[in-house]
Image (cartoon, rainbow, N blue to C red; front, side, top):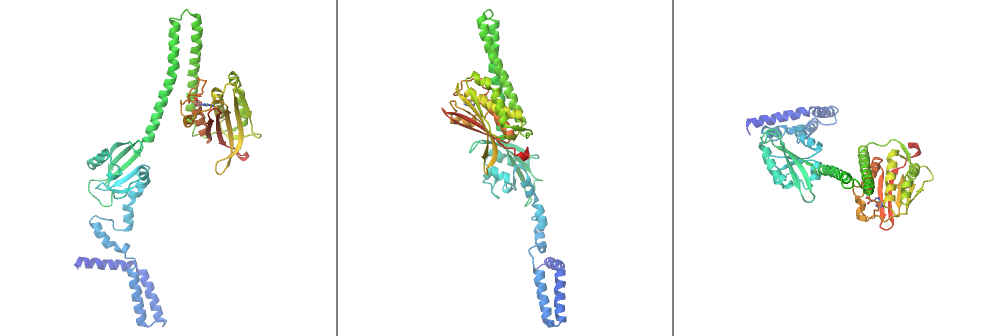
Length: 438
Ligand code: ADP
C-alpha cells in the first residue's frame, strides 16, 4: 500500500469519526454511567462502548463517507463526487423534461442518453442507450447529426414521412459546449417539432381563400358577360334585356349572400373563444325565427310549426347568434325539404350526457328527401354541399359551418340525423341556465 493511500485512508477515517462525533459521545456517556452506577463491570462497559462505536462509525459507508473513492474517479473527470453534485450534474435531464417540444439527448456516439415524454409520443419506440439511427432512419437526420459535430450553429432539417401517416417533422440539432467528451453530459441535443397540423391548417386556409374567390368569381364572370351582351348584340332587344337583367339581379344577390355568409363565418370564428354573456330564451327565439321566415316558407308552400317548452328554456348566449343558428337551420329545412312539406322547430328541456345534465334542446326537423349517410360527417365543412335532393341552388355552403362555430362558442353540441326518403333533424344542445345562474 503506498503512503499516499495510507494517508488517504487515515484522512477518510478521521472525517468519518468527525461526522459521527455526537453519536460516539452519547455511546461513551451511556456506558460510563452504566459502569459508574454499577450496572456493568468495567471491562464489559469498555467492550460494549467499543463495539457500538465501531458499528456507528462503519454505518452508511455508501453515502457521504465514500467521498475519497468517488473523487478519485472525479479526478479523472469521470463522475461527480457526491450525491448532491450528481443530482446537479443530472439536472439537465429535468430541463429537457420541461421543454414543450420532443427532445432527445445524445452522447458522443450518438446514443440516446435521455428523452422527454413528448419525444416518446412522437417516437414510441425510443429507448435509452440505442443509437439515434434506430429512432429515425432518415438519411437527412443522420447527415445533419454528423454535420452538427463540427458546426458552430444549430442545424435544422425537415423530415418527411409517408407511412404510417403522412407527416412533416422539423428536427433541430445543437452541440452542447465544446467538442471534448464529458461522461454523463450530453454531447448533442436534438429537438423535434411535428409540423403536420400546422401545415394542414395553412392548407385549409389557402383552400378557403381559393374557394371563396372561386365562388365570387363565377357570378362576377356571369355579370360581366351579361353586361357585354347588353352593350353589344342585345342593345336593342327589350325582351332579352329584361331577361338578362333578372339573371344579373339574382347573381348580384348571390354575391351579396356569399359576402354576408363569409363575414358571419369570420365573426363567428373570431369570437369562438369569447364566452357569451347574455341570457336567451329559446322558446322566444323559435317564435321569432318562425315569424321572420314565414314568407320564405309560404313561397315554397311549406309550413313552419313551433313546439315550445311549457316553461322558458334559458341559456347563456348571444341572442343574435342563436337567432342566426335557428334561422340557418329552418332556412335549410325549407330549401332542401319537401315542397309543401312541414318544418318543425321543437324546443325542449332534456337530460343528456353522463352523468345526465339538464340541457336545452332545439330540434329543426323536415320531411324532405333526407341526406345520404356519407355526406353527414362533412356537412359542416365550409363550401360543402351534399348536392342531392336540392331544389334550391342558392346555397353558399357556409350556413352549417356558421352554425357549427356559433354552437362551439356557446359550448353546445350540434347533431345531425337523417333518413333518406323521410327527412332530416338538425339539433343544437346547450347547457340550460339554472334559475340561480340567471
Ligand atoms: P347551403 O348554403 O348550401 O345551404 P349549408 O352549409 O347550410 O350550405 O348546407 C350544406 C349542405 O347540406 C347543403 O348544400 C345541403 O346539401 C345539405 N343540407 C343542409 N340542410 C339540409 C336539409 N334540411 N335537408 C337536406 N340537405 C340539407
